[in-house]
Length: 330
Image (cartoon, rainbow, N blue to C red; front, side):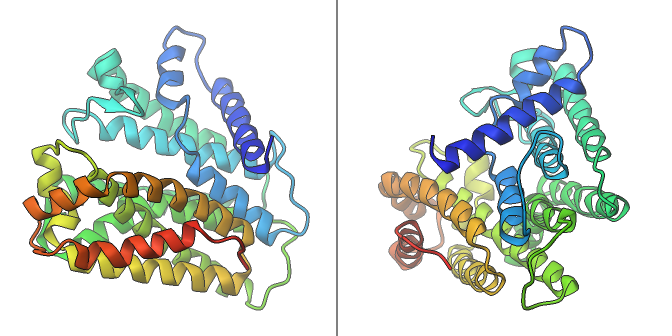
């Protein structure tokens, strides 16, 4: 078993244990499990693990350590957002992770309540942290993921405010996507009891990690938006909201800037494990984008303001391929 597979298995085993401990003794258990397991790439929990590995002098992921609990918190919180996001009153998606979405499989009222339940379970798990920073961590988490953060991003998205300008798109993605990624990085750092000595102060490091999370969140979302264009049959909704159609040049430039900033910040802080986790995601997405590049070009020609798709695609794809082919990090 290689290291990446071992980390994935550890996080998954802990997630199953933490989830089970919070579920009622009722047949509804199966619906909760359906909505969380199997998880996706576990990208956010792996970021928690990577930061702890990079900045702690002596880190080991055990089932009930604070970082294991934080890994489960971010994954279960993410699962709640997906269940609600798929509802007919929101994005109205029929499929999630290659199986029917919760409301399709179990009905709308169950999906709504399961999403509520997962939200509460996530904070129950977070409350078990033994860290002396627990009060600060709860304050940051609720601020970043609540009405002034992630939830506001969903408001901007569903209210169609996102489509008003490119700055509106960035703001929506910063709230809706980047906030949970920022939480994964920053709270992992705040849990470290015995940090490594680095060239910046703890406060400065916190600011750098927060910025890193913002750029990673935007990069994650813009790459995900690009991968959506590999489909031969785009929905009308996707044609209307995908920023690669409405602001192709701005998205391309912002994506390139984000990747450059991620390299700068992670390099300054010596985040080797972070870069490996980041590279793994980029490699997987780049493979999908290259495989579907003909459909991407076709869709951009049909629906985009950009008359020559290669002007925005080529620089981005070259940069993604360079990251995927890296054999060393810091």
